[in-house]
Image (cartoon, rainbow, N blue to C red; front, side, top):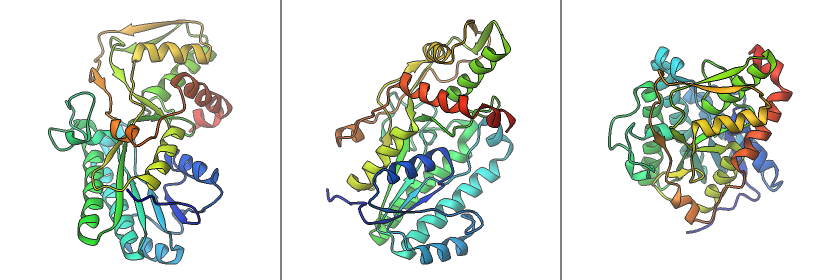
Amino acid sequence: MQKFSLAGKRIWVAGHLGMVGSAIVAALEARSDCTILTSERAQADLRDQAAVTEWMAKAKPDAVFLAAAKVGGILANATHPADFLYDNLMIEANIINGAHVAGVSKLLFLGSSCIYPKFAEQPIRESALLTGPLEPTNEWYAIAKIAGIKLCQAYRSQHGRDFISAMPTNLYGPRDNFSLTSSHVLPALIRKFDDAKYSGSPDVVLWGSGTPRREFMHVDDLADALVFLMENYSDADHINVGVGDDVEIRELAQIVSEIVGFGGTIKLDRSKPDGTPRKLMDSSRLLNLGWSPKIALREGIATTYDWYDRNREILRAA
């Protein structure tokens, strides 16, 4: 497989202000041998095809990391399904088509593990795509991401474009969403235990039995993997990006409790649902290419909490 070097390239990180986009920017900045391009909404609304095409014609990127997306939790997805489907379809279609029109050499589209069926066999292989019903609570977002994968494949098939897609597992890290109503499990646990610590609460309650298993990847590991894929992967098939290991939610909660310094007890509300018993991605294709994660879970949670601790007042006010 021919290597695509990023050295000397003009690289657009679409979505550079988000958790993933900012981590990609940091990973590229550490290289110091490429030019990073970013765009604000005032420069180009990514939902506007003409604006995106015009901006790309002027910026002339050689490569694109497509990390821009409209994201939100279960409540946001359920309340605004049209927004999640339309906005994400427009963003990816405009950037992918714009990259084709501008003659971009390579594009990496970032998807999500929610593209897979709700009851996919574990660990989830790439071949599970479109083999069963989606999780209803985020199907609008998932359908848009599936369309993005297929659009990259279509431009590769029809126009010979080197457009690839990567599907990350559950992510966490600095600049995550720590809202108690809309965040994912790990940042929500950090917020819960920190709130309990500073309010003097004697316990933190977890929903369910605590036995479901989930996989977690630090966003800096993801960024490193995406840069690796941009340089070393060129295939129509999307590729999973994970750490290859998972953890029970109650064990995860214990780790967070210890790192936060919460002195109370952890209680389980078994009257609440557990959700899917296990969700683990099969990332063997990526690992077999020679990439491997570097940030252990406890270490990653510790650095994430340190960032949260330094930004607590801003995050709690948001």
